[in-house]
Length: 424
Ligand code: PSV
Ligand code: MN
Image 1 (cartoon, rainbow, N blue to C red):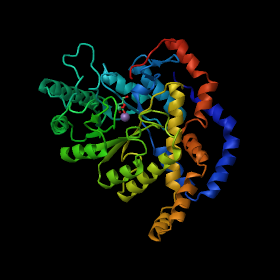
Image 2 (tube, rainbow, N blue to C red):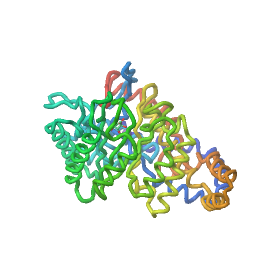
Image 3 (cartoon, helix red, strand yellow):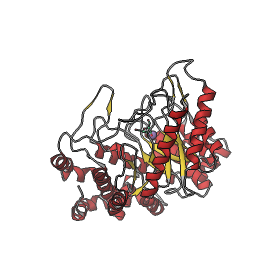
Image 4 (cartoon, rainbow, N blue to C red):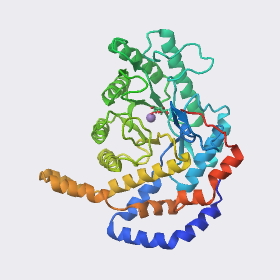
């Protein structure tokens, strides 16, 4: 459902006066406002192809209708998001949920919407119809060699699809682990997994990266074979230079210090990508910044500082993606909220006074250090984020425009109230 550029322009015209006065006020207080706006324009956050439908839990699913019925419609939805916010210029595919049957056509369609293909994702956590061997007791870790080989072959197949689309990375998330003490030999599970990942690594084209995503628990509840950043880092280190850890914000035990994890992985050159979401209890997959916005800011603070220390480009140095699920919100509105929250946290991190923070640390001035961080966090940078969107050709208030244009109602009319997108 493409949106007419005229509609975006009309919407912006109506809001321009109020926006300009907010921007002038904000820019007067922030010396680096112009630089921040430029960086915000460059920053793109990939949207996963599985986040465009209604998520559910094992207790139920309550779809809102108009969900994309195929990959083409998913690309259209992300194209719409990107037209509205100009910050969602990439799509991440999960195979086999979204197999590009005609890659040239899919690539061309994505390009029409200004989208590139971000990391490809493999799936050895579900059995597919007609699949020969089951992943019930794990995939790469499995005690059965044939099952391990099936999982390796699947990942190589995913790389092949990615090459056809111009993607340059593979994210491997394994649900492998055990539900009960005694079920697994931890070392054997680790070695089998490492050997499998090494086979997959060999199949990576020269310019590709592999991201090893970790998760503390679920669906296995006693042990996970890639359960934390230490294990992910071990695999990535043993695999080689093209292997990195991937941090999904919801994949830690409660109260883990994610900003410290990020800082150290970056320092070691082993942070590859990010899955944004928010949570209160576990892998809740809530809208980024909806529960712990200060944590999101602190993470960005480490990212900006760590990337600058290494001379990395913020926009292209890491793979940025949202990995959320929308049980009670319109998926597109939820994604717009996540993108906004991520950009706000990024802008606030950019305006943190790094020099003053360094001096405060040097003097053990703990109070000052906290003041500096909280001063940045409490600065309202929303006018800068809106200005970046405006300059890039997006809408000043994407959610308002989405609602005023009744886009969901049109999608329901076009695709039907029962249309269901693939995913979890
Ligand atoms: C697993 O919880 C995960 O975070 C992985 O990234 C999967 O690919 C994705 O969610 C599936 O929804
Ligand atoms: Mn994830």
